[in-house]
Length: 386
Image 1 (cartoon, rainbow, N blue to C red):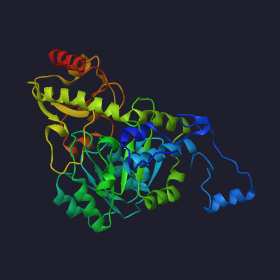
Image 2 (cartoon, rainbow, N blue to C red; image 1 turned 180 degrees about the horizontal axis):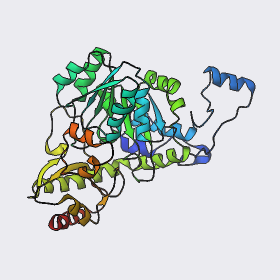
Image 3 (tube, helix red, strand yellow; image 1 turned 90 degrees about the vertical axis):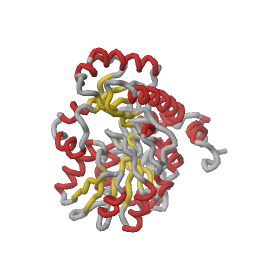
Image 4 (cartoon, helix red, strand yellow; image 1 turned 180 degrees about the vertical axis):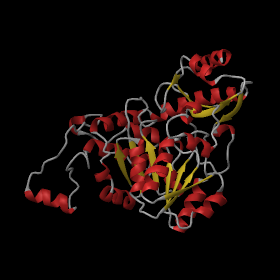
């Protein structure tokens, strides 16, 4: 007997599955490249669309399908697609809907690879992008007419600014513009943009969905017509498929997602509030410290940033840390630090930093699952050593 996912909490939904073969509590890993048919007619039925039997793991795999069902239930969407990376999901979502001459409206401070995709590949194919302040509804409304996509990231990557998702979704629908939100920061536990009218949600599943820093993956969730069109016209040919093994790891991560999000939230808030009072910190970028009336967030994750005072040396501060490790990405069990100065100096990204106004003294923190008091002690000694 299955559960009614419309009547249970996310906590219960993520722990309980439909029954698997042999009474297994975890879904089998279908480690196979292809699936055979019992008869000629069975193959014809599948190719004609009369059957949904799996054909080839680049296109469909039963283990991946279990993951997609869970993501649809979590985000309360109709259909989903999985990819081998977050940028794989983003590129499929964007490239699958634009053609030469189209225009995209994108909020500032997005994930750098999203920025490079829009300014690089899309521009080469004659697709232009207008970057606007995501907090400025008037600017977004002015830019929407004639656009193909409005791309949001709420909160966004470096300065954690939220957008008025509900209002933007409504304006986009009025103009016939497809709305996309990168929901990686909040996860479906703390934000469900589809319920606010957004057309398509993006997840870098490498982050909280995995939670163990051992999987690179991406997911799209949205309406069935949009996902079906992407699966028909785009995703089979870009080839960014998710493997059964990685889907299994993501399903494992989902089971503890609510518990981990709660711990990330509690620990990060402790540290963010202390940083806001520290004499060597000029600013802290955390949504909880500057709440907005239009927020859809039901909670906060472990990612935020702060700006180090001029009297402190950014490289020395970072090198003095021991529990916080220097590294990209986030969402796993370990605490991480990412200095904007290093990112700005990355090949090809300096222009993005100038456009977006991110101070080179900005340091992004991801607060993991370690003891928060010990993490604060690590930061304190780094301030002293900087």
